Length: 618
Image 1 (cartoon, rainbow, N blue to C red):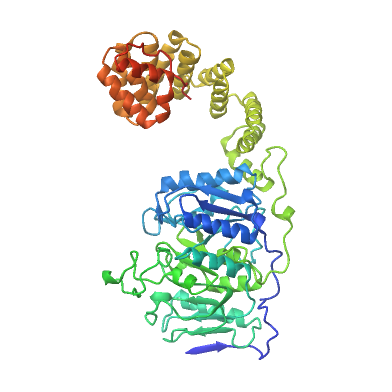
Image 2 (image 1 turned 90 degrees about the vertical axis):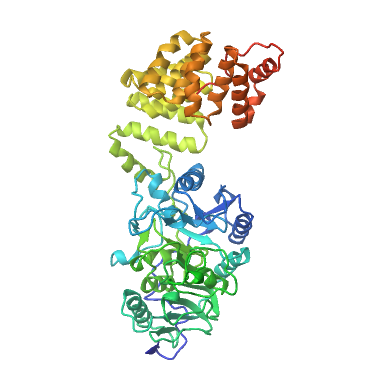
């Protein structure tokens, strides 16, 4: 059956507003964080174009540097993407002000992991939606998806425009495609969207699964609110909707519909058009397939492209859609974008990002949303800046909504509230690189709650760096007063005393205790060995450093210490080998005066090996 839903034959409903304007605003470029991968020329081009097109403030550009490959390891994602974005946001105190994160072509698509409903594979985009929540200190289990608090199907209330007063997530979209030109097309179309056009809903023939139910519900919901004639087309026959013009919305089963065996439908999308497909791997790659590739079958490996025979979201982008959603791995049908929520939200005034995320059941999962989040053809008014970001909490110096959530999460640590406030103030100041302010706040924290090891350690390392040795020693000893077996503190204090205070005798028992408490950690063994060298016992230093080098061959400082100790027992061959290895690991070691002296001795010039290192251990 082919069903064309119509209302009165008039053209007065061109705005396509469903039940009135439920939205207060379209947020602005001030609320967008743009992510540029400096290792990708394509990313740089797309980021610069978008920043200029939307007049995004310069401080809202965040630089990352990772291999421009489509899959990234979880640890590398955590360190080189997620942590870097958190630092970008914290440095400008924009936790609440930033609502949208826009990734650009060249940023990895997928985080490697396991498959299945409790798998750990996820899209980079979906994982970053929870960055705000993670920054507040809430721990999130890695396996499986996380319920989307912004999902419109979770309760009867219509979600409001995103703001952190209500939501602890970011909405993440991507400007991507097969080529840079495809990505720029998303930007151009999103910045000048149309309000006219039709919604095409291509159901799967004789299929009673949820997808068809949702598509039919979409048609009923849209047409029941007075859309003009021929504005919604729902087809549940074997016909493939193609060769259509003035398309503002599109949804189908893609290659999961046996009737669809073509990649391009010759649809003339209007600027601002959005859509998606019930396809489990359509965003698996943004590398363009050869023109000869067509959709295939799972039982025919020779029909696969990029690990799957299924449709590609990149084809919709190439064909001129403005916003689309796809999946980097199997999401399962219940996790796909719900068309009966997507189109009503968009046509009611939600921007592109809000519409897709209101229709998305899960986060930390497989979905990627392509397009400019600010694209909002049906919005009429704007939220005020104050309703998005109410300013800094004077107690913590963190943005107000974020501060409240951060305090709530931290309160589970059972530290006195006054101390927590001081710690969060130090956190805010550290992000702004106010080191004097950090020190002041942490001193206040440990004065209230003395057993704050991390605060003591931060203070000790800072004082040691600035040559304020008495203060550094006092904080190390403060920790040992309640945690006498803390191996890291024992090690750091021993190194400070031996090197900075030139008191190896006083340091020696502390270093012995550190090695015992640290179960022969090679760094701690190295500290003890260096103290033995400073005490003139190079034979003992060599005995300790041999196993330390074996256990940690890639730590330059250990290899450098070994070179000097071996020279001290006249094993010049081993000394030369260790020195070469140390300098290879850290070329800056070659500039040390001690290294130059050792090189002279190894060259037969008879120089005396050094007795102190150039830097202390932190």
